[in-house]
Length: 455
Image (cartoon, rainbow, N blue to C red):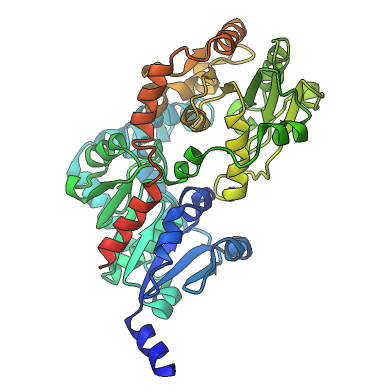
């Protein structure tokens, strides 16, 4: 028996999976992907995550052949921060043009503006992109994760977020040790909002065909090295709610027979502590419907005196929150909560957010808040976010309505409550474009890519 165990350990292969960004727990690890991967008894999985998350990750994901390693965060050097700014601004997407406008108007960084503009234009040149990737690799530390590479000697590294700085450190270390690398573009907006990719992995995984096109066009990834898998955590959405409507609405003290508006107010980090959320809630409360107010998982929000629960009228759902996306944690239980709330709502009112796609998966109409509570310059307004590349393309498909004032918001919400089939064909277009396939097998496809390339 002892000889068998020793022999099995000799034949065992090891993979690293990064989990530094907060939503990776939901997007990747809590899906069928990890369940399928850990079934291979000749495979050892090492999850690298921040030390403060280790205990929860062990509880959720540790297994006989799954080990969670807590990594002590390091402070990034000035050189690393400098190069990060360079890679951000080698991108000339609409999102980064807006970022640079804010950089000048809000942060008063007039001297850096011409240099950042020049960088954005140089970023169109392949030679320039290649030089900066070479400098990034050769100038920065490749041994931050040395102890883990030496301890486990992995055959493959799977970066779940190729734009996350800690992931980049892991990949840099893997490449220097000639270890096979697979990266993933975590979300539909990342390529146009996160700047130029610093590392090109051996294989790249994306959710949709449109992200695949962006990776090839903007990130120098070869077409044959990109695999489309779908959105793994939506595998859990298509099986439906985990509780009955009676159970959920009794808990929330809502009326089973009333129409329900799901309102996700924008966090203050986007609104600048404006009163837009409180005013929107007051407007919605005048509509003949009840409201579920879903507070954000990142940042705070000011919804004023209207943010108090009122039986059969207003329910407030407050998930565990943090002040940045890296610290946010959404596991399967928390995601099931969101799923149930969306499933039993009739209309969703929100700010520019992936939440809109979550809602559309369930066929729910969505109205976006596309205005401010007071006159603001463009660079300081909510309006600017809808000019980001991914949001503009989403709105162009016609499955989401953008309200440009309070009156439009009220009218559009009422129209959808009365006729939820409005724009339904266009919502199907969004599903095809932003989800690719809702067949319950995205996690399986992701596992297949990892295991196939390991072999």
